[in-house]
Length: 479
Ligand code: ADP
Image (cartoon, rainbow, N blue to C red; front, side, top):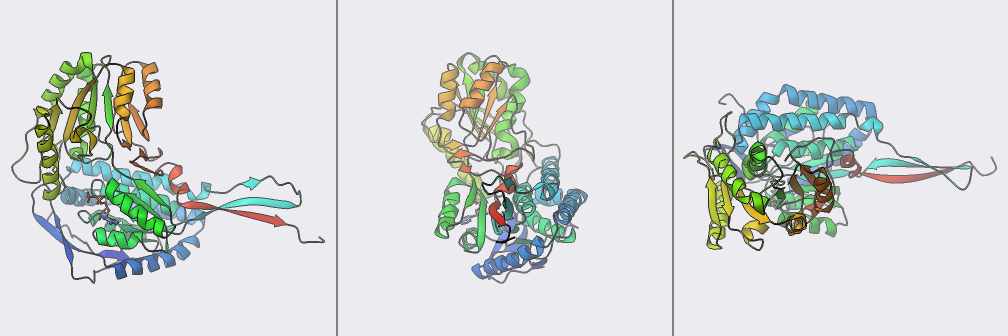
């Protein structure tokens, strides 16, 4: 890792730019707690300059033919793969996730860019039937303009790549404001994009904190915002967008139920159910952290889950399954949720072991919980799962939907009929049956209720960044 050059400047108008503000962010290795780099905090003036660059970038990118755009996006995806190991090392260092998981994330970023690389030549309007045979009516799908993208720290590169590639494929330019904790790979994404042929200004990155994000959200020249993060911050971004009369995509929190019926082969399923809650240290907006088990299988489930949780390998080596939390502050937040749950009457029914150094929280299973408790209602974003019981299908649906969120849900059953019924009844943007956390670039992603609105990825992704123009062409009078 010593030979890794850590760059944490902004990236604007096709090049890295040192920050001008006095304040800086300190970046840490969550696995060791050691400081690894400093990064600038983008000022409102720097954000405004990046949006101006993006306006230039929009004009330049619009001059590319659809096929030229595809070549650039393909080249970007290929370059991400070629730089995969370096990017994975950087992501692993900055987030604490193991190299194995970081490699999967980088491969996911290349995959989503490659998926969208095929989009520009297939993205077109329609011809509309007219009442006047002398008039031709057609639609053009046009880019919505400069996209402002605000991203979180849990999957820094793949979330940035999804937003950026969707927006570029629709013909937009982008200003990304990465999370203050994890800007490194997003800056690399922009540098790789320019090397792959993006014109200067098509993709800009302003590093910073909430103040930088607020400046981007309130810039009236931003055509659309796309935000992934907490529900509370998302609402602030939404208010800023509303003040300018601009739309936004909101990918917010979740408290996803993972519903386990007694007819499932529990010993065969237990690992996937447990990892559905603990993957990425539970720092996963879709985490299936609210496990609901059919009454007759409850004791067996808790016993099997306790064994599995006890055997989880926590650490940041290639071989480890559960990494650290992102910051010390977040570690305190997660501990606070569990302490309050214990005061509310919850019982620790299973716990893993953690290394001494780094921002680790032991994977924890809580039982004796009720639906009203904070631990069952709030998003914890750490390796904590609750187990509650339900009596029948109706009860499972009611409890599954008893949340302000609606991002994801899991169903474990050997009954096809039941899986179809529950997949219909659960109010979520995404439902997994007999798996958890599978993801495809081609599948639209997003939530219902307080989990947000708008969809990213899939063919719906770039549609969010386009708007329709209608053209009526009539033969000249007298012709
Ligand atoms: P967390 O609390 O885990 O940092 P947030 O939802 O607050 O999660 O952060 C997600 C992203 O939103 C980050 O890039 C963060 O810097 C940014 N952000 C925080 N506050 C604001 C704000 N007021 N306006 C715009 N972006 C913000």
